[in-house]
Length: 197
Image 1 (cartoon, rainbow, N blue to C red):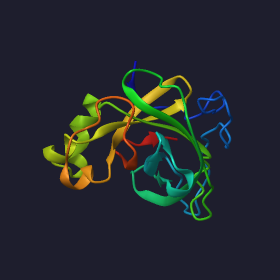
Image 2: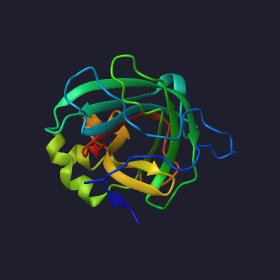
Image 3: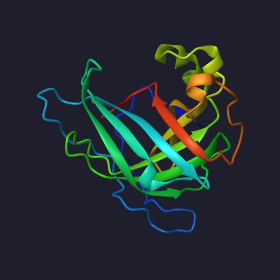
Image 4: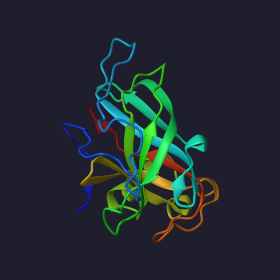
């Protein structure tokens, strides 16, 4: 069963990350957030990504993850642009998810998000995410071309939190991917819902 993240008390990973061959993926298996230089304390965080998918897996040197730390009023405290240092495919957790990856991340010197690994996926559009698409400025033509973006706070839970699509889909629309495998190309992930810290 998929859960939509509206509230959560913890974002910790349980279980190590490995690709489909069983090889460990670089990175700590925790998602503990660090601090910023700002006096306000982070209360939420968002997850976005630009992933160059080749043969079904994000190419590490051509992909990045963006994490915004937000205060209690949802104002951005800082943004961490994190290079992907390793990427591995994980077994698909359910039929609604078409690609599921463990991404090891380089740390940021400017915004200490404290996240070294994320479980990220692309799959079918979730009804709650679909209902929120107009709030980030996309019309029905573009919305119909997007897929759901999923995050795993641990190895057994998946949350639909945003939209994903091939880069041209965010400009001209098209058709959403309706099953695995997802096509190669530049995939963008844009958040709709933040995660509490």
